[in-house]
Amino acid sequence: MNGTNRIVNRMILLVVGLVLLGAGGAAVTAVTWPVAGDTWNAGLSSATEWMVGADEQTRISDATTVSWFVLALLVALLLVVVIAVTVIARLGGGRSSTVIRVEAAEGAQGPVTIRQEFASDAITHSLAGHDEILSSRVSARRVRGTDVLHVSVTPRQNTSLAEVAATVTRLVDNLATLTDRDTPTYVSIHSGVRARLAADQPRVQ
Image (cartoon, rainbow, N blue to C red):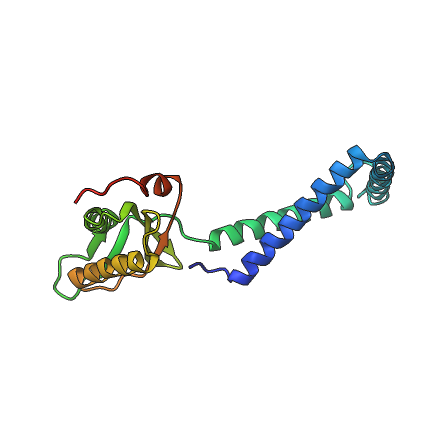
């Protein structure tokens, strides 16, 4: 559902997770095991001395404290920030208030726009009539230049998920028939404390 390849997303998450896990494990080991703590301190001291030496040896001139080493670090940090911003920007276009927008045809006064509130009210009000659905929420997002509808529902516990998905799909198809436009839609079905608590409650017919 986004412009970034899913495999790339998962690889980035895996690498970041492994780095954080390794750093946390190393910190805990250094605190609880004296030998590891001494090794950690020795390595940190060596790294600090190396960076100080590199800074002194790469000074641009004797009249300044600025070095090529520091400039290279700044460029590397800037590159990391640019890459991070680019990846985040490609993950999604943010929320959208528009579900369908049809450009004006010849002789028309202007484009036809169907707002997210209309689709949300139409679907949530229809789902309210289904006792097996505890709650529903509809939102729209801009993904790769396309408005995508997201329908999130929470059914009662032990409710057939296939039936819930079929119900939501039917309502989305009805919306498409009403608007004469197919709207890209994805459905998420959630279960939580509310679903478990409502499982034994009597249903009002």
